[in-house]
Image 1: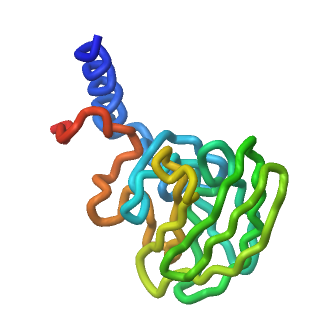
Image 2 (image 1 turned 120 degrees about the vertical axis):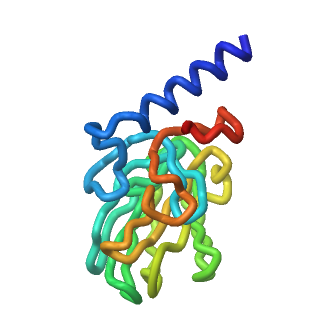
Image 3 (image 1 turned 180 degrees about the vertical axis):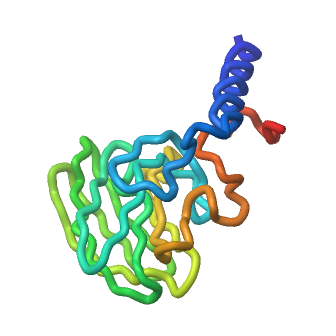
Length: 168
């Protein structure tokens, strides 16, 4: 049984990264996403798309993801996020490096002001559900935060169940 599950996970991970004609990644796309899991700014996250913002944007907190998962803007730019908990349980929005820790009850919303990093990406997460992949990133527009970040491997498939297997 375990071997069959491991093989199935291996087959899914292998299929997602073997086709060069498939778009395969949502790290540069806009919209709602929903493309599985990927490493974003060093954190495993459930991918629900990327959005480029200017001053203010809405962020959906649901069970167990942020949408959009990657929020892009100009380096050093301040952005107001309207956090809407559309899930059934309490969620939070945490950015350690910016001293932000906002808890939001189901059906409630809150606003926080964040700063797009000077370069690269900064992760955010739900302190209650980070281990379930509820995480994302603030990123500098054009630099990407998904598959193009160092150490991410460039894939959106979830191969965490295959251990140290790299798929090549």
